[in-house]
Amino acid sequence: MSDIILHHYPQSPVSEKVRVVFGLKDLDWRSVTIPRLPPKPDLMPMTGGYRLTPVMQIGADVYCDSHSIIREIERLNPEPTLFPGGAAGMAWGVGRWTDGPLFTSVIALVFGDAGDNLPDDFREDRGPLYFGAGYDIAQMTRDLPATLAQIRAQLQWMDDRLETRDFMLGAEPGLPDALCYYLVWFIRGRYSKGPEFLSQFRRLVPWEECVKAIGHGRPADMDSKEALAVAKAATPETPETGDDDPTGLKPGDEVTVEPIGIGLPNAVTGRIVRISAQEIAIARADEQVGDVVVHFPRVGYWVTRGGDGR
Image 1 (cartoon, rainbow, N blue to C red):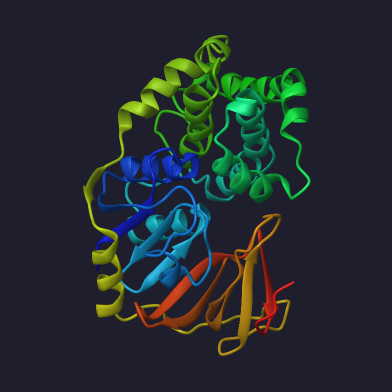
Image 2: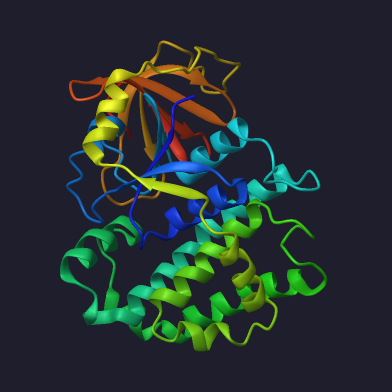
């Protein structure tokens, strides 16, 4: 198997979730640092336009969205499991909460707290991405107490969960720990009163330290040009498979895949190679990387026939 290559940057909260999964699995992996803001000239040739962070590459197979990345890591490295006690279905459901409403509230907290101190280029890029073109950062600042109340209630759920266990699933760490930890990590590091706010959770803070101690596995730096060369020298290893998809889509169909609820262009067009209840993988080509297969989760993504998107 080719090396696992993660395209990310250190401050990315969603990348931290994946890095913790690498730590839980005790994996060797290659680290490509990408720009925080577009353009991302050494990433777009692989993804075909998907610009969110992180992206995982294994040879000429490219995995977009942390859901898709983590599913593949678990498939390739089933031990130690991310689902001690057989909690696979439940854990993915937890992810729809942590990566959805709670993530949005945490981003609103960081934006509202920074206010006018948020760098212009970052605000102009990330604001429309997460909140749409008409977002109002001044309103986010005014709403800080209400946002904190929403977040506090949800972090209390995590704290309550830890009352009789070391980790979210029990004695052993698993995927729900990564799903919860990355938001606590982000609050601590990016909210100006993060440490003070988190100190009220008497179980969550010791748990946070335990997850932090797991680490990120064993990363080794890789240049982005080298990653492009790896993709071009490789052949995608995704077999062509399909099932009785409710949309009627099947391998060979030309489609556009794009994330739901993202306020900036992220659509990718290609030919279906694999389609199932959990995944869609599409083949595309670029002169810099040759033939690649780009993988997405089904949940959270629109798939439309042809190249026009929604």
